[in-house]
Image 1 (tube, one colour):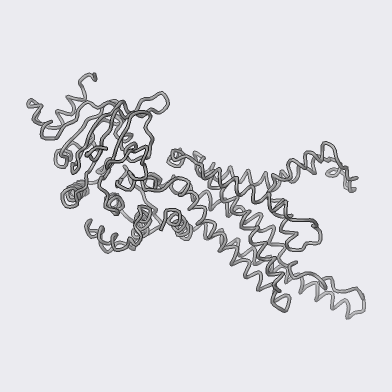
Image 2 (cartoon, rainbow over the protein chains, first blue to last red):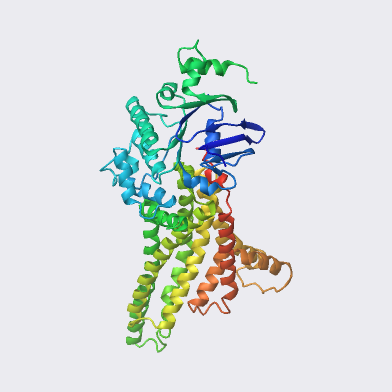
Amino acid sequence: MTNSAIATDALSKSYGSTLALDALSLEVATGEIFGLLGHNGAGKTTTVNLLTTLLAPSRGTAEVAGHSVTAAATEVRRAIGYLPENVQFYDTLTLMENLRFFAQLSGLHRPDQRIRDVLRILDFEGRDRQKLGTFSKGMRQRVGIAQAILHSPSVLFLDEPTSGLDPEGVRTLRETIVRLNTEFGMTIFMNTHLLSEVTKTCTSIAILRGGKLVHQDTLANTLADFPGEDSLEEIYFRLESEPVS
Amino acid sequence: MNTFVVSARHEMLSTRRARTAHLLLIVFIGMVIASSVIGWVTNQTVTGVYEKVVADGLTTAPNPFTGVTPLYYARNAVIYVLLIGSLMAIVLGVQATLRDRKAATTDLVLSRPVGSATRLLGQLAGLGVVLAAVIGISFSVSWVIISVINGAPLGWADTGRVIAFGLLSWVLLSTFTLLGMLTGLRSKRETTALLVPFVIWSAIAFVLPQIGTAARPVSLLNPVPAVSSTGGYFDVVAAITGPFSVTEQFKRASSIVLQDPAVTGDATSSVLILLAFLAVMTVVVAVTPRNRMRSGLNE
């Protein structure tokens, strides 16, 4: 057991002969907004899938909220919220019916009042009888956040949360993420391509390249450690171009 | 509320909102009711002609419907359960498991504290309730129609036989629902997920029962009834293939339950075979790995 919200040790995942994640060891402190960066295929989604117990690791260990992802997968699932990339719902069901299903799966017995509270937090009141099939991409993303936080998880995993959103949607989502972290104390782990969002949102970052961890530190230290670079984007491309040890 | 019940209730709600499911359920209920109505119309027509013939003094034979058991009117329903009911059950099963794969909602579901077997068995339970409701509605209406034809409510014994027929129908349809769920989980395309169980159903319903007969070519080719050969290779083939034709077992058990004089014997072996298939299919679906549930479609 560790005091970190997330801790991995030599976590690896292979798909056949392809090594998608190579001995990842990282630590995310409780209360952080953590950004995992990397090109497509770097292993970001595999990492999230391992930490949310959707995949079993090939080697290594990982703990989320103090529980092993292999030995105590059910406990991990109780402690986390998860927003997958391009989140989808049951389009023939209403917003309330969708959220009620996920809330009850998470163990909430009479979830309607909690759902209304969460919809209020996300400025989504008055739409609970609307079918999800009529919702825009941005609205679905917010519903995705809603389903992820219904059971008040201590750790929230967001996989490319701003993917496909317009600038307004990106801003709304960013404000929501920061609010969940500051007001509700959730540790947030997110994969993203948008470096500008990372700069505005994250407190610490890690960079994956070809399944290997090439950098991990707080955002402030990262920016300070590369005085020659103007922005996180410059640092990111520099780290991405350096040979992997 | 545990995750099994949550999954079952969600499945019932989703099926209630699916238009294809609505259509199939309405057709099934309509056909089962129609089977009783057809029996009633047949009775009325034949009795009308019979009374005219008797009035003309052309016959002294008894009315062919005299002495017919009231359950005679429910026998047509066996074939509708077998044909329309099985197809409906397959579609319901395929839709249940394909829904999550098509909408990519499996990851959301499996990131909650729910086991894959609990999720799938919960879905099966939900569909089981839907099937029970459909069978209950259609057979209740049949009961009323038969009582009207009969001029009095069916007695307890006959009502019990109708209920037993309903239970047999539920077991058969649940087995085909599981077949649909299985192909919905295993197929890479939606069309394959539907086609494969239909082919399997066709083989079970039409091909397997023919193998025993086809093994005696004389009886197929010669219009004169063949001399029944007993023992030997042909009977071995029929003995092996017979139990695998669950539809034939259902027909046999249902006919015995509904007192069809053409089928005699004990229904126990047929009922046990039906239950064995249901149990095997339940286990096969329940052990589906999480990775298989998460796999997307190639379309």
